[in-house]
Amino acid sequence: MRYTQCNMYERDDGDDGDLRIDLIKPKRFLVFREDEKSKEFWYTENIGDLCIFLGNSEAFCVSASMYPGLIPNSIYYVRGPGLGCYNVAYAKPRTLSSIDGNYWIEPVA
Image (cartoon, rainbow, N blue to C red; front, side):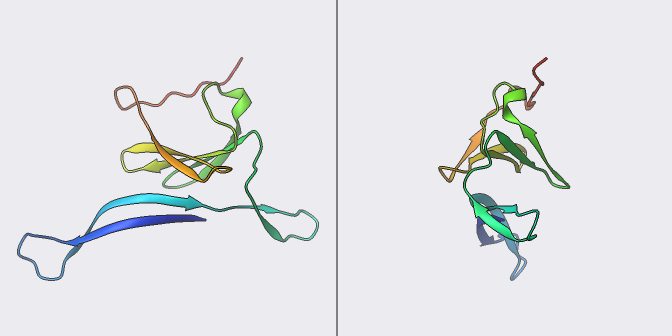
């Protein structure tokens, strides 16, 4: 589950009542594990070596130990034109920087 903060304001282009979302900031993510036997979901603050990637259309997980530079127990997510990283244990979001707008992740051989 993702919780965000949206700053909304009225557009200043003469149209009455039009609202625009200026900035969407992730505030918190909640992660749940499924118990395979009972099929129940349990809240967790530890996903171990995993990193969860959340995009605009799909999500996937990878092992941080196979990709240098990834932070274990983290969620990487699309944030506008860039990426953000959320540490599950410390509940801290941060914006990632890029070089020329590119993010490179390569597996360990």
